[in-house]
Structure formats: structure tokens, C-alpha cells
Image (cartoon, rainbow, N blue to C red; front, top):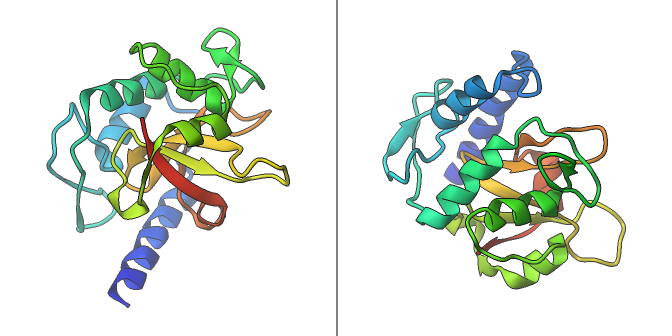
Length: 189
């Protein structure tokens, strides 16, 4: 029951924040970094310390992450607001979801497969309760044969970076009811 109340409170806080009209698409990149690092309890420079959400007095402990996951996350953050391009895997042409992940890890010399389904098979499974900043989150969003067809990189604070779909830029999303229903699993590279 306590967990249900905590989840409900978290969703309430996120919905209040969304109602206030905050938009990542119209925010300057520097402001996005500040918002991500401070308002959303995102790990800053690999430290493991409590962070306070500015919309709540509750403290959330952000789990420590590995240096390579932190670097990949920073690279992914720099791609926020870049355009979506099906089959895209670079900042000049744009990204699809798996291309964004592959690019972020390629920049730190870690090879990951190209498709979301292959990345899911490649990653070491992680339980949702053990999710760390920089882990990959996998979803099934369409009626396809593939069990997994969408991927993002976890920011902490129930948020992840992803390249959503045509017409939408790389952005931050929260684990709202839509994404929770579509969630397949998490993995660690």
C-alpha cells in the first residue's frame, strides 16, 4: 500500500509539472541540462547522493553508475532536440531509438547491436527495482513480431531519453501509464 501511494504521488508530481507547460522541445540545451541534473534527480558526475525534487520534499537516492554508462548518458543528453530519422544513427541525419543508443555507446568505444530487439538480447537483464542511471529500458510499442521495438536510456527519477517517432525529436519521457504498459524490461551494457 505504501508503494502504491509513493507511485501515485510520483505520478501526481509529474503530472503537475507537465501541466505547468514545461517543454523540453522549446528549452535551450543548457537549461535542459540544468533541469535534468537538478529537477529530476539525475546522477551528476557519478556521485551517489540524495537529491530533492523541486516539486516535492521527498528525497530520492540516485544509485551510483559506472563511468561508461555515465559517459553514454551524457552523449545521449547532448542529442536532445535532434530530429528523429528512421534508420538514423548520427546527429547530422537524426536518430531512431536504437540508433541513439548505438551512437552514444559507439562514442565511448562500446559496441552494441543496431536494433532495439538485438540490444535487448545483448544487454544483461536488470530488475526494475535495481535500475541504475544509464541502463537501457525496452518497450513493445507496436503490433510487430518483435518482442522489443523501442529503447531508451534511463536518466533516473523515472525518466529516460529516447527518439520517439517520426515528427518528434529526441526527448525526455517519464514512465507514465503509457510507457509502463509498454515496458518489457531493462538491461545493462
